[in-house]
Image (cartoon, rainbow, N blue to C red; front, side, top):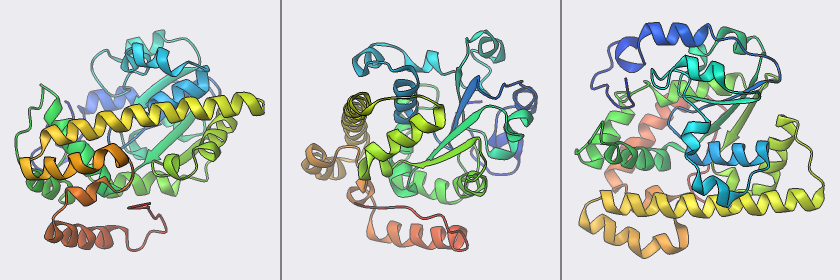
Length: 288
């Protein structure tokens, strides 16, 4: 089952891949230093590219030429399937959108490393909307307002974003878990890259680290420009025109939602956010 195939929120079978695939995912075996799992509630291509770059010491231009998705298969997807994951050489880089409770049992017990990136939900829902529109398997043609309501009502694939992000936040102190925020890449990329390298056990001298930060910055600029352009194409004419005026300076950066949300939509979103996150100490930067 692909993202967003859910139209109602009445059970796991409609929110997640089949029970058989989830069970197979949970039974996957992992080694302490051999696997790196990147779980996100919604696909974050930028995270996988930055992790691939830092862990492999790859060149950003090289990443731009490869199909990064082939390098990081999705744990719970029936295609290419679990057999492909078994064939990968160590350290295996694997993606997943499953909540913490559905991750492989061995991983919950501290085997393998888990890198989780959360993004402020307002920017995220804008990006997720365009993701749904861009895939031929989904061909979502509803309005952004309708899509945003589904997000707030937990009626998109993989269930509640609020539950998903808080589950991983509760495990952020686990030795094998690194919890990151998308916004930190724009606030202090150098510190984030250092944290990644330290967590992955990769050693860089000062000059190498500076070069790695610059390479990651190139990825941020490339991904941000592509995201902003695709969002412009997917919105109504008046919203697209408003976005075109700002994307040259703010493409893909924090606060993109401000050019898309209406006042009433923002008020409703804030209410839902407080209802779901009011008791959590997890906070986000909604603009920088």
